[in-house]
Length: 271
Ligand SMILES: O=C(O)CCC(=O)C(=O)O
Image (cartoon, rainbow, N blue to C red; front, side, top):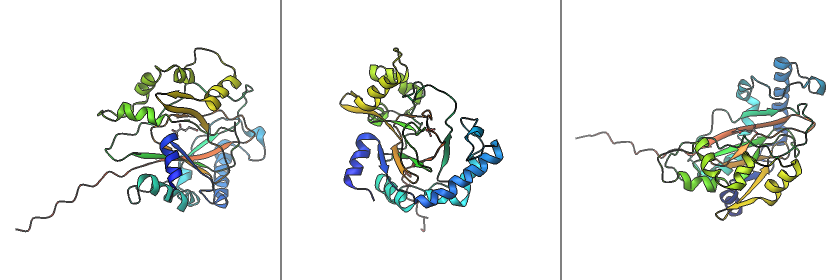
């Protein structure tokens, strides 16, 4: 289970880090399996970076159906989901992960906070308590800052909530961006009018942060050791980041929804 402090942090920021959520030794066979696929499908070799000639490999879907990936659904992850969604109020997925893999690539410009690709993942309104879904990000191999970990706009789920709460409509990413983009700080994040340098963008969005209607916003980067996991509120804006590290970024993600309340089954009539 999670503590009250962890629950508060999740409510406030939309993001909760769980160090060591998955047994580190269980990630080794997963990483081996991925490299095996990369070798066969793309001709990439683990200890020969000169063969890493692609940014984003394909054909990864089948891999997470393999038995070694079941360890992603660890006791710590299940217990945290119980704490946020309610015990018995969510259904374990058939597969615990969709792989997120990016290679360092060849670009020589420095790492910075990307523009353009910030989004929320559309999660329909279900009438269930908040959060209606939690997205898991799981780190399969050690992930250093600047190494391609997902970027999360902490606090942003609290801006989305009031915009969708009393509507029939779901959180449509394009419409939300239009609405939220009326604020200058957010517009500068995803459609900058100024061409700021990499360190300026890092300072502005990751260190100083912003504030809209009393909601603190700051860009956080998913980093950590193999086996660490993050739980993110489904309405939180996030984006893929460049990998300027020395090794590929190996992560997995999945969205776990709150089960809809079941209608009580109607009793068979006996009379
Ligand atoms: O590749 C990433 O880090 C971003 C993933 C993402 O946007 C998503 O799973 O919704």
